[in-house]
Amino acid sequence: ELCAQLGYEGIDLTVRNGGHVLPERVEEDLPKAAEIIRGAGLELPMVTSGIVDAASPHTEKILKTLAMLKITRYRWDGFHYRDTPSIPEQLAGFAARVKDLVAMNRHYGVCAMYHTHSGVGYVGASQWDLYLLLKDFDASAVAVNYDIGHATVEGGAGGWVASSRLLMPRIRGVAVKDFRWKQNAKGKWVPGWCALGQGMVDFAAFLAMLKAARFAGPFQLHMEYPELGGADSGKKQISISKDALLAIMRRDLDTLKQMLREAGM
Image (cartoon, rainbow, N blue to C red; front, side):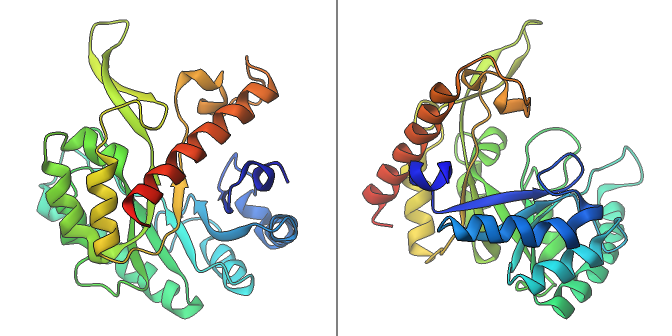
């Protein structure tokens, strides 16, 4: 009800360990959550899962429940590189696991969206490897959840433009957040997540690309900066008031909506 009052159109529910719905209870709890969310006038276009591949615990039970509830997309937890063997060899191994997930997704009529992170060891951080991993598979079964914040971390000066163009035909969801570089307590330069529109992400250029590609959503607004008093890191007891948190949620949503209007979306 609060999200609806703030002007949000839907909720990206977590169905993973420690999330809103625990995977082992998905059959009992996800229908209840869906009823509450939709009863408040909101959409439930996707969930964020901990599924890595078809062998992950409770995968088939989760997908079966999504299909029953007509939730057609889920965010797919990704792969990580090891030091050995070579990157091409590891990608070949990941592809075999993707193949099995594709089969299960097609059976239940759902699409797994691979989320793009930044940082060492993440498959998909460079974007090109994710293209190579997914290019031979059905895009209605395995697609991309493109995080423009993480993409800018990895390709700030313009690499994100090429990666966006490369993955655009497979982008079925977009995560929105902003950052600027900062030095941490040890003097190391790291991404400093900040309020939407206050960082270095070129939203105008990116949204223009999405519009040209006729992207239809969903957008997920990620708020992961310290101003949220611990809510950004998942704490259940936060250091700011509820009213202050809701004001931030409304402000960032208003910023995103203004960006979308300016982009003609």
